[in-house]
Image 1 (cartoon, rainbow, N blue to C red):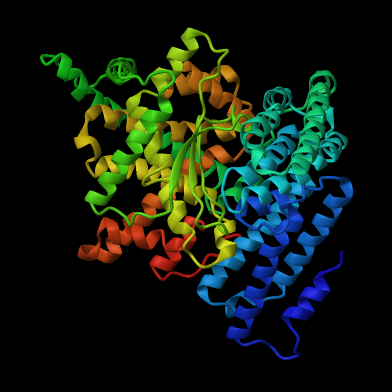
Image 2 (image 1 turned 180 degrees about the vertical axis):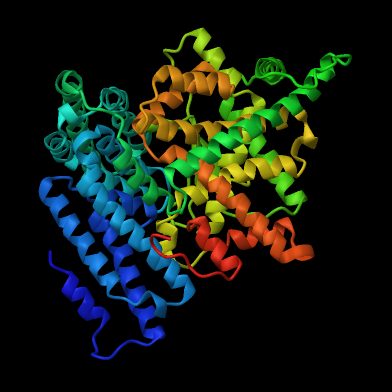
Length: 589
């Protein structure tokens, strides 16, 4: 698939150098072609972002397809290299830098990281999303979406056969194999909950065809389950720790930030001490509410601080949601946060709908909640705030541990992060930015960092009338982001053990056992992602401080937030360059 020469010819049809406007036009053509080609890279991802030209196709994950994708990536890198970035408008310079980072990241992932060879969850995510993304939102008539689902279901046997051919069991970490076994049946659950109840709209002939496709897919999933349990898992002896070289490269691509692993760890360890001291200060206020004649020592040791903080946290842990009422609580708190944002003129509220849903089964086991925004090309569709139900096989002790962690104050903090003014609000405003490329290639640190920033900003703005228990839980959640960044590299590079990680999270971060245990699993299954919260937050607060200084008396929260969110979701350093009229950072800066 030799396309580099063709692309260069298309971009440079003349023999003379381009003026800036022509270079911008050439880049825009390339960016548009890349977005269009995403349906070739992955039809399932194309559906997710709102390109429905390949809704009837399921990804080809065979060796030949990987080779074609590699060649296409090289073609795009060559075409982008042929452009003079200095001749581009500032907005296009940023998009070009983002695209180059993505292209090089994908090429490196294909050649070096090679998750396609050792991560069975990679394939389960694609298969589950292939059907879920067609049925979750009403972007087309249900008959059309069911027809696309039937076409994809018929390709499930081929897809899973390709995945088994690609996976090398001896390279698969045991935790990835175990999690795949838990998640694989989720496709059948999607079929039963999203497809079967809607089949009545089809003709009798179409129902027969869809039923046959369902049976074919379910049989293939069952066969794959047997293979996962009897063939892959017994041979899954790979190391889940990716090591320093892979981790550092993946981190650099994921963050697109000048901060290195060692700098991140140093910052996180410093913040760890600062936040724990802040928690002690707030905890004393809570403690005095119950014990007003307490005389605190002038120089308490860490053990004393620990006991006071834990005692204060117990007050928050006593305010629990019902086991089956977490979704209802989240709905009420989302409206409460929305009302506060509007009444206090904090940021523009988008009019895109948001729905709170039960997390689909195939996506459980990694996090308790997430925000699933509509694709940037499906801008009028609702966002989903997905919350995972408690596993039915948990003991009563495990249930209580979880509910203590996700007390009513914690759910409020979580709802701010995932909903308003966190991910839902930020991504809805982001999708207004006209660059489809920038919307598709959004920055994880910008998005996750904004979520953490939103938590801290809301409490500082007086949400819940400065309730000290809310402030304490808010600081605890920030401390979680700090410990996330510490264990992320410590586990994958430094060999941190489960006991050490659990001790840091439970004793150092005041997390309950269930939360820490789930985070240990998540840390094994991922790398570099857990650092995005802390790094993004650090970049957001540094940006705000710089803008406050530059704007002086003209600074307001509404003005700042609206402008900071008006550029889409690029890495924070690019937003800083735009807001403060600085030079656009280049790759490697």
